[in-house]
Length: 420
Ligand code: AMP
Ligand code: MG
Image 1: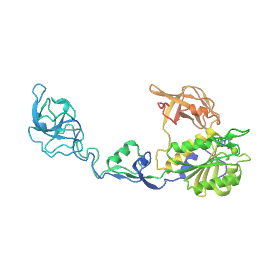
Image 2: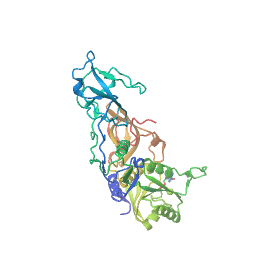
Image 3: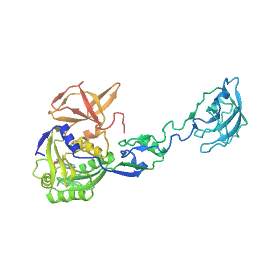
Image 4: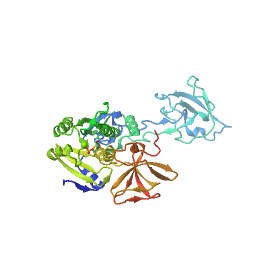
């Protein structure tokens, strides 16, 4: 890669994604598969429902018996059985008879419909109440009414979920109902996170003159955790080549799938990360036409994909959001690599320097449209404007002035209706 190439955001993203691939599969217990990506298709071993059953508490009967039944002239049937959920009836429902049946209980042989208990003269669901000898029914039903048919949801042998499908709570429920207790999924990416700089002290430490706390290490760890990947802390590297090497080696030893560092990749005298990567890695140093977050290092370090984020906290987070997030998602097998976006009506004037700008803003839904208000200072060291934001408004490359009423794409880091 050429030194200090100038790239658009799209070019940088394409190059980053090019350098990572989907990780291998592993088999995990069902609940650990939540939010992960299926590595192989799931075929149903059973039908769902597995047997015909009642969708109501009521009486299983033959629909033909109820022809002409009304509240004034109910049809009376003899009750021959009581079928609770989980049991199987040993009777056959013949003409003139009915079986009391609970929701989910198997339909007895001979019955072809269910009448809800509310439409009988026995409107009690009390288990203590003795089974009546007869039941008076106040209306007719069609064959199949209140019966759930076997295979109505899933036919045995069908491919229920294809490989590549993301497993949400509803998929976990389906897998459970099919008896799938171990699930093949794409392995979760392990991401090594390194902070660099002589000015950094640990969060627990009291501030000293000239020092700041290592916020990036925590912010990037949280970003990795929030996407369901596995952070591996590589600590703080001092601005010496030996220390940077030692900390990166720790990541290699911990078998990370991606190395992420912050700071030390610009042109300062102490930017030793750059020096180490130039010697030991195959890393390019880019200037992305993006704001915040111009410097970005990308390539491999000892064959592991490497992403060097800028040091300023907002630049680091926004660069992670734009590049690292997509790379980690791709490695995890996901195909939707971008956040959801909406088109928002900007409520104020926004100036840009012509780089693709990510402006911290609050997007709200107002009737049919989304409106956007910026959250204050856009300095790359001002974290509170990111704290207030639920979106990043994207001012396209080449645009220097956005006026009130103009439309911008909003990259939603949270949805407008998400309130905490
Ligand atoms: P650099 O890229 O090393 O010039 O750092 C750019 C800015 O980011 C400087 O103001 C650093 O102090 C700040 N910075 C670097 N690393 C961190 C970190 N881990 N946490 C908070 N701020 C940082
Ligand atoms: Mg530095």
